Length: 83
Image (cartoon, rainbow, N blue to C red):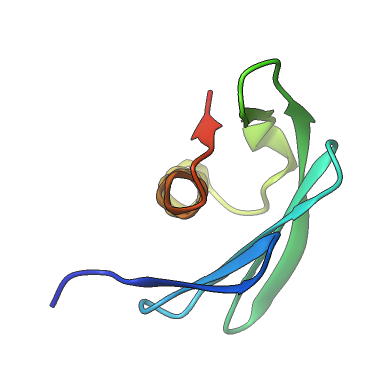
């Protein structure tokens, strides 16, 4: 089954894989999945999108990579890019 994103609010989407991503102004991205809820440090870009600071994501390198990939797909579903 392929992943589907549902827009819950203008700034938040939910993945059929069980996580949500919400832009928090131009300085953060809230990431939520079962057992995890945190804000990733980010910066709004001149193009529609965000740059994020993976060091602000808890977990080991593999976990950070997984979460960054989830955020990238979620933002793309909102018409935003992640750099």
